[in-house]
Length: 424
Ligand SMILES: *Cc1c(COP(=O)(O)O)cnc(C)c1O
Image (cartoon, rainbow, N blue to C red; front, side, top):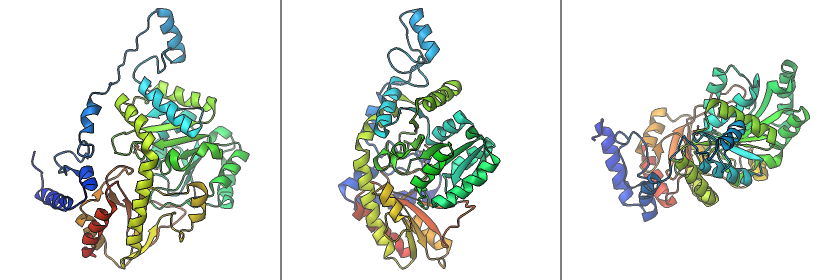
């Protein structure tokens, strides 16, 4: 199939020509460069090369789970579990899903976990399971979650993205004056936020929430189990988009909910059984099961490459700031070291406010190895503008781009940034 617009194929030629001069490591990650119009914008299997053939032979979900006798079936149907592990019905929790959930729950030292078809569905399942009237959320919360809260008519009560314990306490006290029942309120933490990377006083917030006997939920996607284990800090429930770093190649759309307490896990599992929203392809679960073993090594490489790119950006005259809690100059650096210790592939660049949007966007379009795309944590380097709807905190002046450093050779990425900087 031919590209629908000639510019797209010209740009593909430029990318291929650039790639030909890259190291073997970078070439293997990007080859073959596909025209997004031809492959509907999906980077795999190009990114996975031959590995994709193997995944096609994996087991697929089977709706029927067989029982030797009526009595075995009756027992399984009552509790929702087959005696062999997995669900009594094949769609929601396959043996592959079960294995993946046990592994990630163990890594987080949780009581257990469930898997959902996306990170967003893990968030939605958790909130639907407890159906609060209001949720305390950071001002920089993952954007699509706001759409979910609006849709469910759950009231959003915002606290500042980098809140101190005192700031959080005053927001909570006000909320408690309106919602006095424990079940009406959930304290939701996401840190660092995935566009501007603020970090609140997590320890302080947990202590305040526990004191008020409120349930705490944390979106731990930025950190994954490698960088932070929220349950050990006193969080009740962790949600993670395993679409991102755990899978690591953008081919594991899924989300996980890990609960500390058996009662909470049961409520979440009941929600999934009632809605059927726990159906995840066994192939996805087995990919995750194995990729989790290499998450730490990949994260370290993403982080090392991001540091090199950050150093480059900090030296450029068109940049006023780089947002990353890994930098000593970040106001969140101390909290970052206390909780997370090491970064990942993400950082954001603030461009000089006098630069026009056209200039910055021409820079983005001149890049060959960085693709414009949502969802990060995969093998390919990405770039995307940061648009955040803030209510209690403001964004810095100037165009902001978020970068994800992929697994390419960092020298190739620097060469690409250098040639695109000609536009600025
Ligand atoms: C991507 C992301 C999600 C949602 O994950 P999907 O699998 O894309 O639905 C949730 N939270 C954060 C912080 C994310 O970055």
